[in-house]
Amino acid sequence: MIHFERIRNKTHPAYSCALKLYQSSFPVHEQREEFSQAKILCDNAYHFELIYDAEVFIGLVLYWETANYIYIEHLCILPEMRNKQYGQKTLSLINKKQKIIILEIDPPIDEISKRRKAFYEKCGFVENIYSHIHPPYHRGDEGHALVVMSRPILISQDQYDDFNVYLRDKIMKDAFA
Image 1 (spheres, rainbow, N blue to C red):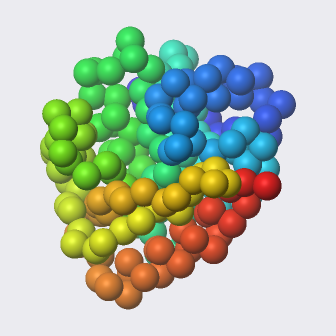
Image 2: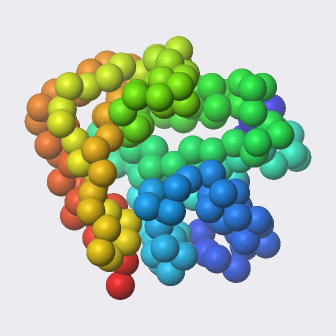
């Protein structure tokens, strides 16, 4: 049975192991710096969730929850646990909160990004039409273009604008020193 365990500070015994999975799963320009990740753990809106199947650690889902939606910032499954429907089961568990779920993916231009988009579509996500630039995680970097997807419906322009302001002003506020 899939369940989550929330980490609220970097002294949690599984934090360093989880951080290694995070760092190996995403390109550096899509990762928070370690101090930024540690700092936001105590934010009530932020969820750094370990994913377990019974007692076996299988991955991470890092998301922000507002009154109106959930924004999944990062989702990763251990390489040896992939292709066992754990990503799909994780998204289904989050969907039980009965809120709109928003996430971003790379534009589908190569085989991996096309498969990722197809995976999210299979999980009920739809591509939104908004031109979207994710703010940089590191000083000196520029933001990068991503595709905004949502579940179970497309989001309106007002909803997108609200999300984008929240992303810029809250989520990315202290991304780097």
